[in-house]
Length: 327
Image 1 (cartoon, rainbow, N blue to C red):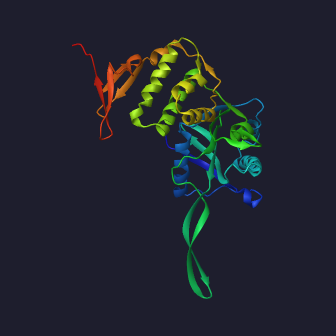
Image 2: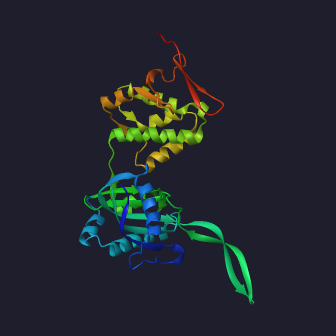
């Protein structure tokens, strides 16, 4: 469903200025601006990095929004002031503009916040010096993100229920590594089922493998087989053990794996008890060609070269050789 922006406001959180610049009026949203913001909302709202959270009992923001009847101006100013206070104490958090507003997505109304970290670029600057026109190249340091880019930080508060979707990064805040948006601004917590966490662990492992290994290393096969083997032990999954086995010979990849899990609130010391249904579902791996042909292979033979073999072709494609077929 398309994103509908009902109202929006922008505040400047540039700590070098000493004070935040808070708008007292809503933005005039022309079609071009609406397309720009709604594109970023859509990409951020549906991102794989979004955390599904609930406000904690001690959170004051949900009550504040209700007491203010969702009046965007005072609510957004209060949030922006709190963010600026944290940013001013902690230089690691990038300076930015924040756009907040009320939008409708997937049939629900949300109060959203998008943090537009500044980016720099070069441009021309024209002036007059001693009655002569002069043009120079300068670096402009407060440009906003490109169109339809996903924001690194933001949130979407469901106006009907005390739930919030959060995109955030971890920074050193007051000397401690912290996700300040969820812990200090929102006071919310993420709830994931063991199945959701296991699925996320696989996605994170595959992403890290892409960064640290070549296709020839067949890391996806290794990750899938390792997960299957662990499930066959009929014991709860230990996240730290998985990381050690996924990336046994690559400490850098292993460290990034745990860091990325921490970013989505999955600790290396967690233990996941998974249902038998999930274990059965993981018993087969599906391979699908560009023409739509799908083959399901039992995970226990996925890495057995006596049964199947993945062949890397010079053009970058992969061929599958199935052995010992009885007709």
